[in-house]
Image 1: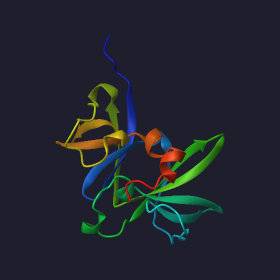
Image 2 (image 1 turned 60 degrees about the vertical axis):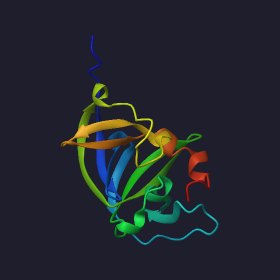
Image 3 (image 1 turned 90 degrees about the vertical axis):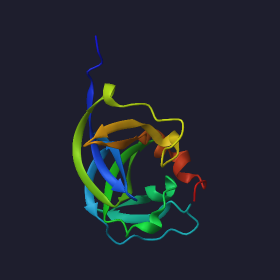
Image 4 (image 1 turned 45 degrees about the horizontal axis):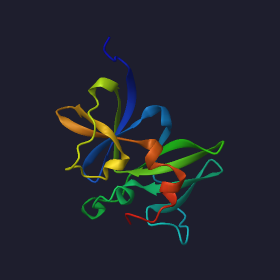
Length: 156
């Protein structure tokens, strides 16, 4: 019997590349509010924003994914995801250039990441899916937003 499981993904653009995150992780999408800078944070952590009285850490995926963000304008939206860190559900605000839509993708339609030629480090990629005659990079949220990975200095 073929694998027919499908999942929903939120698609977004960052530095001219199209990405997707599993939509179950996403709680909301917002315009970028004022960001409070946090001293001594790694370069991909842009600061914090006030999210209804709670601080949400702002992550620049462009920096974390080693993309050239100099060729695009400032990010226009925040994708708010919630992650469980040792029993605490904490919000992470991900900067994006544009959010597109929620799409359904069958697990069988996600190809493994290639060994070379990706625009981003392969360790953060779950796979590639063809949407609208172009490839969309499906990000591995468990790796990308792991506490140790967010605190890491590398790639900046």
